Length: 241
Ligand SMILES: [Zn+2]
Image (cartoon, rainbow, N blue to C red; front, side, top):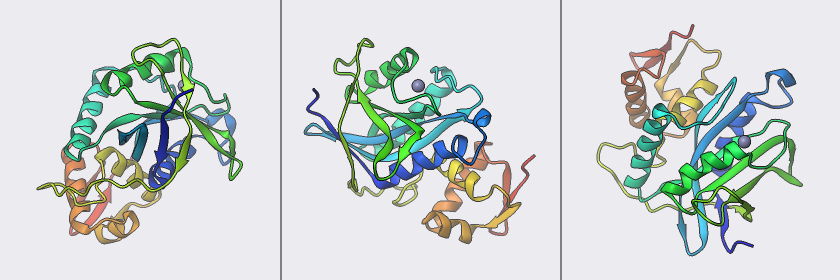
């Protein structure tokens, strides 16, 4: 039995659930359920694994979470930004819509990538069909007791509680709460699903960020070509097809 335990910030819990429920849940017909996956940001201190953020990354038809060159670039980008804040990629989450909570042999192979970066990396698996608040959170969190081995995993106890991170001001970075581009795009997609445009001020209010941070993220996303829109007169216009 592991001595480790996990503290999961409510914000991280909410972000990952929102992400996974968008692709599988009782509001969707079962044949449209899709898996979703993201990474955790946090740190480990005195046998406690703190997860402060969840960053949604992938979802879709056949999410097979193999680490290709593209995933590794994204992974590296997130890890670098996390490290600037004294944090690290603390593992990953993914959904098993209607198939139960466990780690498959492929999941174990993927988990090896995380434990290579961080020996206390966790793997959270969520199945919405087992989610019944307050009786069942619908997920379990696993670790591999021997990092580097893919032969065994075990459950690690957790609680949901606020995770404090040291406030470190970084020049040119959005102030806290900082947003990762990937996380921003997921939130933006949810907010603007049926809107052809939105004022940056309204967007900032919805995200709980200041206008400057939102502008920085929008420009970063447009430059990155990951945002199908343009910024004109403080209004974000979408050219979704
Ligand atoms: Zn899986």
